Length: 303
Image (cartoon, rainbow, N blue to C red; front, side, top):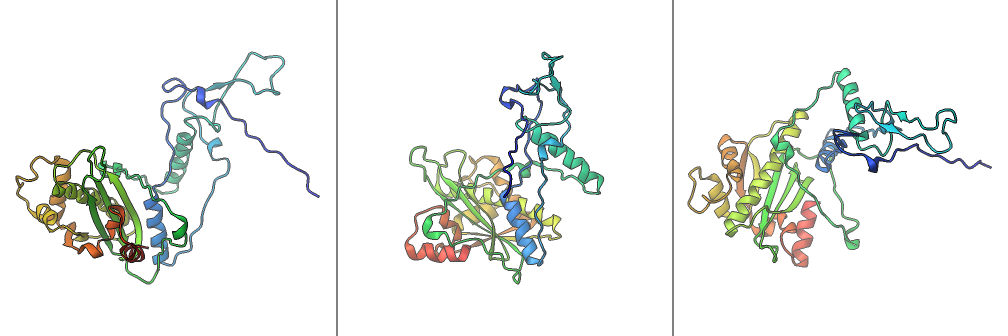
């Protein structure tokens, strides 16, 4: 017979903190899902044994930079000094700066062991919200990372012109594979402003996919892989022609300059554009309602 044990955490009222007074910065070191999938794919490719680590009472190990005072907890009030408060030396759960304090402490430890911090640039700020709803009838479909296949980076991109009927904005979609069969990232995101033509929407979608390819290329460099002429597949010959034409065409002179970097990447040989038929365009999974046969074929090719 086991005795019941009750556990409790002493937590402050974090909801009462004010930025600039009780804390300066708040940050939670959460890894991006595509980075996790990239790591798992690499571990499977190399037949590595993966260990998962967890740190108990994580947020209690981070020293505080700010002066944070808390009331004496009920039941533990000092009868000789009932009006005094505690000044925290380390973070507690519910403090807004607790994740940041723990991240700084962990970084300091890793650097002392010979690790080095990454130096993020603007391309690392490309954030893609991933919304993918799994239905009950596809619960058995999942990601499969075989170890006996290649590790080359490839990408598919497509767009849905004026898919949003209320705002008439288009959707940028993209998928990135390793070895052609290991899906590590996918995205479907509404474009920032209304495109004036189908070619413009497709050009913007291709640029967004290219930005994600660059991020994956940078990550793979840390794993010892150096890729150039990364194949990107699109189902529009007009968009490919615009992307490969170094002369600014009158059809695209109104497009925001930030989308034109794909031309430079093609000239440097970092990416290479290829035409793919609509029936083989995997990115169509995110752009349109497909018939049953087409959906089944593309789903099998993707996962």
